[in-house]
Amino acid sequence: MNMASMEILFLLLIVIKLQSTSEGKVFVKVECTPSNKGECGQQSMLECVVQTTDSVKDVQIQVVVWEKIGAKDKLLIYHKGTTEALPGYNFAEPSWNGRNMNISLLITNTMVKDIGDYTCMVITDSGDGTESTSLKVTAKYSKPTIYSIPEKITRDEDVTLSCNSEGGYPRGQLTWLDEHNKTWRGEITVNTTDNGLFTLSSKLSLLKNSIFSKYTCIVSNPGDNKEDKTTLEIQDKLASVAGIF
Image 1: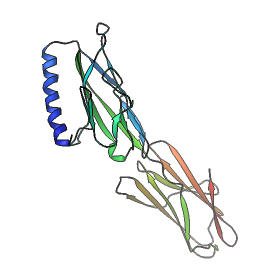
Image 2 (image 1 turned 90 degrees about the vertical axis):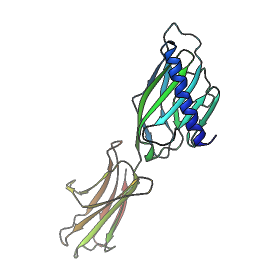
Image 3 (image 1 turned 120 degrees about the horizontal axis):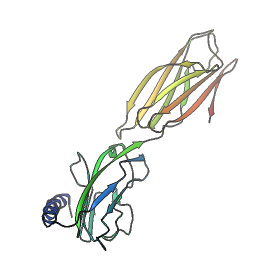
Image 4 (image 1 turned 60 degrees about the vertical axis):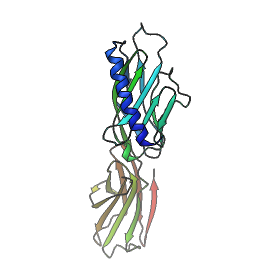
């Protein structure tokens, strides 16, 4: 079934929903985790379950529709035994069927574009319900790399240190520390890749005869409060880079 067919089916499902509501069937409640967290390149799950009143037994789910607010196409439509979904989306439980009240959505390869709000609509033989949920996404920045211009630092000429870290989300921060743990703010450049991830670069200018023996570049990610760092040790004749964990 192509996307156009899925959209037509969705309109028919809305009609079914209105009919079931007008018939006064028992209310069915959809409960979702309000906010979910995911990591780029990994699987993410939007958790939702169907809850019914105690008077309802052996509920059969007839329709499930997952939709990302603002997106053109529906992500997943289940209708009486048939599931149609866009690539990368499916029920969280592989053997899911209409008797399973866990209607959570699995995103198989999380990306920045998956950030946002979602709705899940359910129609059962005992009523219907709709609920919203959201997804926040982070991506780990690469370990910082440091290089210098000139490559060899002799302390008797000006030096520019550059620190780079890439592939992270949301926008992070690069910070410099000297051997006394004093903070230095370099000139920061931020670029965004085609897939929405950030590349950070920071340049720190050092004046000759006032160069410390050690500089550390720290990348921090506000999305997960994680840090990574690399240290440049300046010896009497030249500099060496050491990773600090």
